[in-house]
Image (cartoon, rainbow, N blue to C red; front, side, top):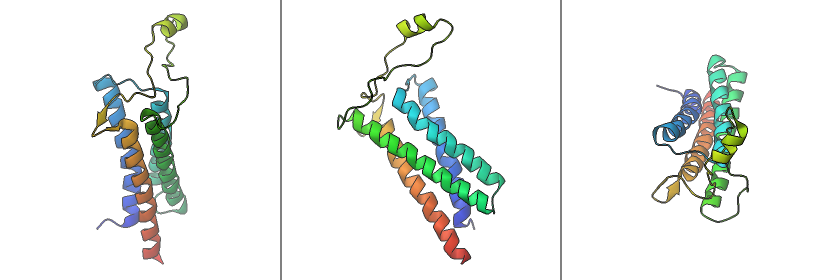
Length: 159
C-alpha cells in the first residue's frame, strides 16, 4: 500500500513532468507557439520538477519533505500565473503589452522582423471553452493542494 507521503512525492514529480511534456508536445507536435505568459507558467514547473527529483533523492528526511512542499508551492505558483493568463484571454483584465517571441537566432534584426506575434490575449487552443492556461490553473492548483493534504495525512499517521 502506498502511504500518503509517498503519493505526495509521486504527484509532485508526475504533475509538473506531465504538464511540461504536454505543452512541449503541443508546441512541437501541433505548432502551438507559446506566448510570453505561457513561458512564465513553465518556469515554476521546472522548479517543481527539480525539487521533486531532489526530494526523491532525499526521501524519508526532513529535507525531502520540505522539497516536496516547495514543489507544491511552485506548482501552485504556476497555477496562479495560469489564472492570470486565462483572465487575460477571457478579457477580464489587461495583460502585459510585450507578448511576442523572444528568440533572436543568428541574425537578431531578421529574427525580430520575421518573428510571428504570439498574443497573450488569444488562446492557442481550447477545450470546452477552457484554454491551456485555464487547464494549467485547474490542474496545478488542485495538485498543489493535494500534495499538501497528502503530506498532512502522512504527518498525522506518524504522530
